[in-house]
Length: 287
Ligand code: SAM
View 1 (tube, helix red, strand yellow):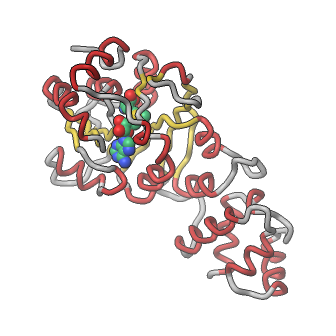
View 2: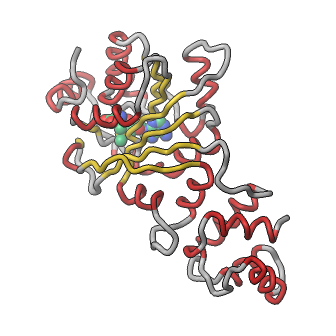
């Protein structure tokens, strides 16, 4: 079987099918079998496990996942890759390709359909995701994939830092808090830009996102929580007194006394609040 992470094989496949990397689709192919193998190791895949890959590209990671799992559903938006990926499907009967936009489908319905399952099962996600849609992909997985066991994702290093940021850090924000609400995040490894073709302008990190069924904090109204985070981090230099009073439409005196009861100083800024602080704030103002 051809090694689809080898630079010469990639070159030949692209030439044979008249392909070229599409920047607008974030097509930076990972051409380092050693790194791909380490990513798959960090997934801790068992032979019984089903996997979802987002953006198989030319199939370098897909090969690694197929060899270790029961089945891989690889979701790719670029239909021009279909002829090249067909070859891979013919060599690996446990790989199913779906040529759709991952943001516009019900991933779990597609898994059931692809593997003809009567009931939904737990599955893992492993992917080198397109950088331009990292955040929507994270939200899609966290909000709409209740049976996902975990997701091992290669992403822009700077986004990884945002996911792992602590309060007070300048990269701490809406993405950090939304992810922390749903999941634990672990840093797996960094990957140099030299491992990709074409070479991106940034380095990458692999992160493991592990959804927590028993949430770390409870909020009475998830939509209020989400809206407050969105508004608060659009105005990150404003104090929580100003943000809370305008968001909950209360006068400053009332807002101040509620914040005092919560033990939160009125001059804190959104980036100073932990996930627990935000939850207490939402529950106090929107009981
Ligand atoms: N997995 C390959 C690798 O590691 O070499 C390619 C990774 S490349 C960074 C990202 C892939 O995601 C590309 O193949 C791109 O076409 C695909 N992609 C981009 N937007 C997508 C979307 N909305 N839905 C599904 N796939 C998408």
